[in-house]
Length: 555
Image 1 (cartoon, rainbow, N blue to C red):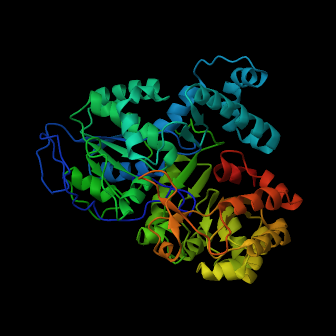
Image 2 (cartoon, rainbow, N blue to C red):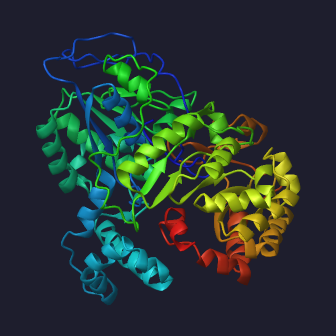
Image 3 (tube, rainbow, N blue to C red):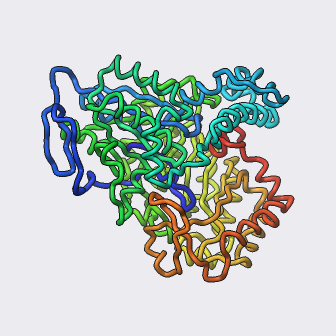
């Protein structure tokens, strides 16, 4: 498990599913004859065993610095549980804090205020008291993000807490990522990561570098770091996994353009493949995540948010156009007994303020278990509109267990659309569930998806009406416009044209059967949906930039 994220049809930040080790790929090479690395051809070379093997695991910038990265902590548990030393580096939170505390020239009032108050604003985001005043919270986030914007503008970037977009180079083009790797010193984080990596490599002498690439916002800095490593440590093998890499490898037309930079790419959970690369056969022992080495007091949240995945894949796995289904990621739960044991140990060790369940949807079985035996810490996560939640008493028991918020993928307020998408959702039950959760005091974060092939303008209007009718039960809203996954089996039923400019794109454009294309959808959202006064009020609830990561602290 090189990374985590919430799978949806509009983002490549996919939670890793499961896949076997990368299949043999012609032409792959290994340039490290003194190390025991399993290549694509299955060739095994001797590793220097005079010392215990060691791995440096990296989570690159930029990802929201609200909580630790789950992927490398799960890998760390597997490695240390098999007597392999490792060091964790959350270069995203460290890199962002490095920029926020760097000298910055400015002459406008806003920027000068942001510079003057940056230390206080950083501490404000770590203080529970500041979440009781939305205006103060918003000002702190806006001022800190202003600093990142200024740094980015100076380097022709759009830079924020959740975004890294080069105005000249694209993370969707392998040729651009190779250029980034070659000119690594041009990356905005280079002064930070060059010194930090030299320090860690000199102090730990790792046998291997593992990089977790989950989001497009991480891609360019990831390859800048890889370019730096290959230039300065050419004999050090690099293994790359994570949600974005998993999506690349799921493409049937994938041909690896990064062979000269990355020695091995891993799809899906990486614990087993990584251990095999190190010459260790994975055993059946329980290996909980290990957060040792991470700066747990440096994340921008009012207390530690503990990310935890109880399963990979999706137990429903039937929704049309779902990337999880398109990538053939099976549902692999850890099992409730193991989950409870791991959580108990992690809670005891880290003393978190909040648990963030990363599952695509928490299973009904685990929900029952949490309600019957509360973890002792507030928690939130994604759920489906299951019959279980139609029981008001059960919703009250969830609240008592510490559930402060549930994220729910409604997608549409039109029953015909839901049926065509095979969502398994009945709007009458949705109404009951929303009312039950509201009565129990559990906040709801509702995800809506516009522009699917099953929707038209009339259906979108019915979604608007549904939200208005249930506004008192909806705490937060996430609005997204549908993207057609390239590997979706349903894509062939539509006239497809690839207007996404890049060989690494995960999506393709399509001709909507009702003419309800992106331009029309965006116009509807901007001119009608978001301007409805009741809906606008809900949208204003959403914490800027940190969105669902901070939303539970406002519940």
